[in-house]
Length: 113
Length: 116
Image (cartoon, rainbow over all chains, first blue to last red; front, side):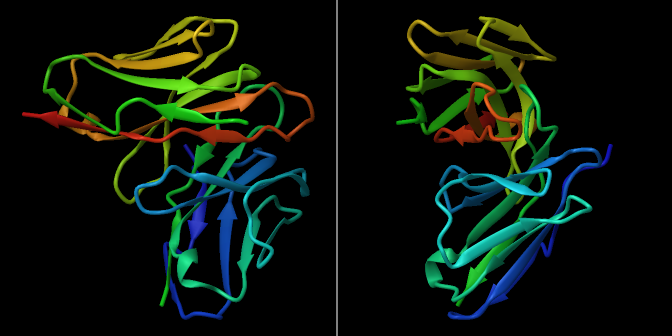
C-alpha cells in the first residue's frame, strides 16, 4: 500500500539558512499534518491543512510556513534556521472526516550546524 | 489544557511474555485514541485505535482498553517478540467539529525492550 513520502530524508543546514521539506500524502487523503520531534521527545504538532486550506496551527514558529498544493502535497518552509530547529520532522496524512488515524511518513532529519 | 502522558518511560519484558503499556489523558473531551509504535529512524506506525464509545478493542496480539472514568488508556501486547521492541506512544484526538480540523496530541512515549 502507498505510504506518506517525505523528502529529503536527511538535511544539513547552517544557522540562518533556509530549508524546504516536502510531503506527499497517501492518495485520496485530503488532510496533511506536520509534526516536529526532538531527541527523546514526543512529536509536537506544528500545523495542518485540509483541502489546501490551513485547518489548525500548533507550536509553529513564525519563521516557518507551510502550504498544501492542488495535488495535495505539502511543503514546510523554514527560514533563519536556529540550532534548536534540529529535529525530526514528520508529515502525516488522513482522510479528513470523522475518526481515522494519521499515517506518518518516515520523516526528514534536519541538522542545523 | 490538553495533555496525554504515560506512567513509565521504559519497560522491559521477557520474550514471550505479555506487556502492558499505560497512558493517562487529561482532556475529558477526547473522542478518539490511537496507539503508535515508533522504531528508530522511522515515523510513528499505527497499531490500533479506539473510539470513546468503546472500552475495549482487540487486534492481532494487541488489545487497547479505555477507561473514561479515570481517563486511562492501556495497550496490551500478547506473546511479545523481539520485533516489538520500540517506543510506544498513545495519542488522543478531540471530537469532530470542523472538517479536517482535528489534531492528534501525543503523550510521552514508553520504550519497550523485549529481552531474549
